[in-house]
Amino acid sequence: MAFAYRRLRKASQRKRTVLTENRATGIFVGLRRRPPLGVMLAGLLFLAGASSIGPSGCEPIRGSYLGTEVCLACHDGRVASDHTSFRASMHNTVECEECHGPGLQHVHDGGPNGLYIDVPPTTFTGLSDFCAKCHAPEAADYAKGAHAESNVTCLDCHDVHAAGEVRTSAKNNRLCLQCHKREFNSTEAIADHTWHSVDPAGIGTSRCTTCHMPPTQRIDQNLGQHRHSLIPLAPITSNDAAQAGVTPVPPNSCSGIVGCHDGPNIYLPHFDVDNPIHNTLLQAIFEYRYPQAGGL
Image (cartoon, rainbow, N blue to C red; front, side):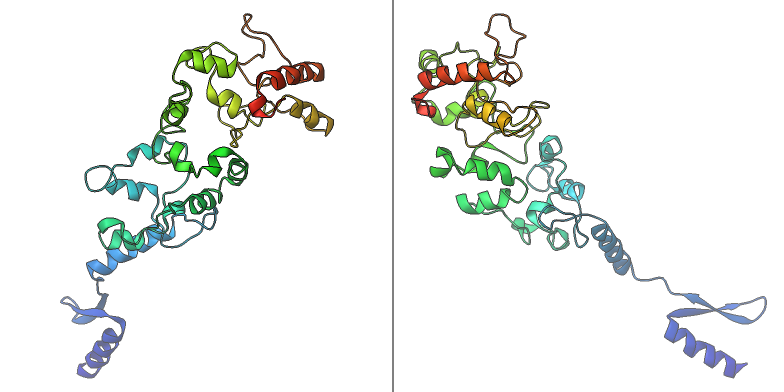
């Protein structure tokens, strides 16, 4: 009996078990030891990170990624900076760590001063390249315009953590007038520039983004891509696209945009972007009125 007990005790030490005597039978029973609490917590944290997604460009991968809700549990304004508005942002389907890198070490060390968190570059080129990982067409288009030449960055207009598309409303021209107030300091100055009445927040006339950022598609224009060079798109480009076999014919700055010369408003002239004669007529008007946009 004593010999058997010694053999069972040695085996239990190798298997990390605890010997307990069954008093009814006098037989020793080996029970598994409970792992330390710290080991259990570390295991749970590892599983949480392994089951989350993270970046490889914009592709999800496995690893030490915790997920957006873990980030927002601290970044709620009480423990760390408040970014809870991210849930209502245009980027809310993108995980925080797709831009900021894996958060496991940051959380493990208590998150002091943004330690172990990637911060996107602040230079114009660095930030443009960073955003282009997911927004390559917009970044390439933006590089063609004067705003890029002036080193205006994506974040000057966009706040990826905030609700909405841009930092302040573009529908009432406030976003653009933050920088262009000097040359467009009155309703008259805006009307002289646009050759339209000025009601951007109402019926949409003289809204900067309608002419300077026309949509690239005919459907779902509010949610789809828009031109980012901020150079008005000449009407003749729609005819060129149609001749190249593009269907449906893409919008230009004067026609093909929902709510702008597309028919519902009987007080505005109607131009059909599918009609090459209309686009040719608009091109003549465009060249006469807007020489600064590439006209005569």
